[in-house]
Image 1 (tube, one colour):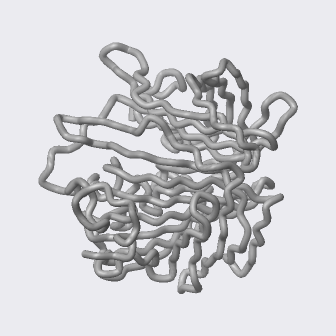
Image 2 (tube, one colour):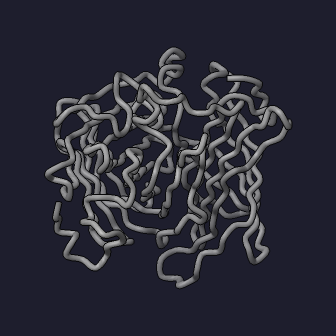
Length: 376
């Protein structure tokens, strides 16, 4: 199938650009962004998913207000023939300036949440290296390349009869572009295939922080090896980076050590992040000690991001045109159990006298003795 992108000099395989170089149904491209205010009032995450081998495009938004309520809207459509149109129902995505600015919109709809947000790069896009790669039982389970960027947003969000105005001084954000064979989504619920291997426990941790003169990002995957009694860090990547216009190249991180805390006033299975500190070292020997204080939370599992809620998960065929919406009470223990999973924490970071802001993604599943967890 020919699309407008086939006019460009960017082919990588002997095919048109609507076909990836693999037939794996898990092949995914994702554009993800979140914005949150530094006062802790609100936190929004939104994303587009493109699944050419499933013939699906989907989108979601999760918007949490004061850590009390969260609104989720999800939509899906048949990908073809409009394979090069970035719209799903009232959701749309636009590249305003490649590598520098993108725009996410959600038009008026029956669920009472809408927005128009332009995300401009505070830093250049940072390539995550190495790519995530896993093989399980002889099958490529995950093979993803991604790039991330610290952003400053402008625009507005409307919800609950209020308009939240976004400006570069009071709001910060993060965005991510990834592509490849992805461990998440509809492959989790497919029948007739061998169930995936489950480790005794695991930790998933991503962070992206921006200070006035520098920033940092890291991505860690750790698995608890019950037979040997230690943690296996199977994926690690990270960088120190600098704001746009400084012309300073990012520096790879060689190590990150984390010491986190979790809330003990809510059900243990919720495992909500309560702060902590990290220390990291860059390839030139630079060392940083960072303390972290979460100020907002946004659950993305009920939006389909690694979670299966109300018959939907990313990449699942929902028909030619589908959309729904939900509202959650984030202080209801039963709700927290239902929507627990992948979530982000808008956070304040301190490094000596410097104060910065950004986000932490942290999920600990199963056994992880360092933080006191002994089972699923």
